[in-house]
Length: 337
Image (tube, rainbow, N blue to C red; front, side, top):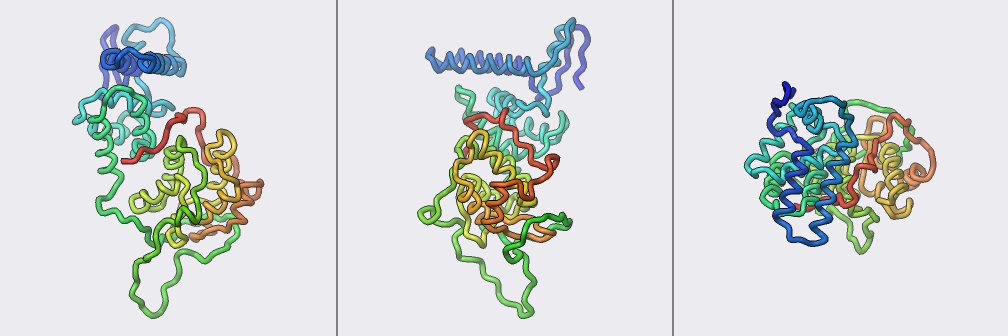
């Protein structure tokens, strides 16, 4: 932990002081941007961001300057942590950035569950909020993501999924054969499928998922992706609304009712998903397999539609996927690398 005595303060390396970081961003905007309404806009935005953080914490009265400053070191569990980590990185030497990210990934400064995914799907977009040039820093972050999240020999076509070790019962009706089938007695030479991964967009157009919500979709559901490295690229495209050919379905290690409940919530409040429930049901049926009584199975469009339109088999409130609509930035779209 940080230590302080009177006005002497020891700060851990890479610990982010929101007030200092925000003021440094403001000063850099002042120095590097020409006078314009755009410059005034960003100066206001970052001043408001500092004030918003101050409003989110409770600072006792009567503190020394060193004690006061300690409260402005943002914790990893704060809703705005990844925003401020992104802003902090734009100020750093690019060679230092992997060290910063490794430190937070190690959880030495606090819990950072699914940190690598958050860096890819949240933080990279937050870098775009900073208006001065920080391309070298962006490139350093992307290189770190590629090293940590992607296998250089990554395949693009998923293979058959393995059956989970544990069994959770559900009332979902079984409508298709399991993905994992018993091998035939006679050994046959297995050929890789020549079927394209995605269906033709002219034949089956993408469902309407707001571009501003693509990154959030990935961040929420990638935690359930059974084989992260193998299916990541395909998964990202599916979360933009594309349709897979059936033999390339992705297995999400969860029950279908949990997924449908989350999709239902995303469609309702902010209209992040704009297609009809019938089209969404087709998208879910086409793209995903789920856990059904210990097996890996797809669900029918009709059953999926019933989950989207009624309370049938709705998950218990304690089991629902928590979706934070408040802290999601409206421009948080996944950025291609």
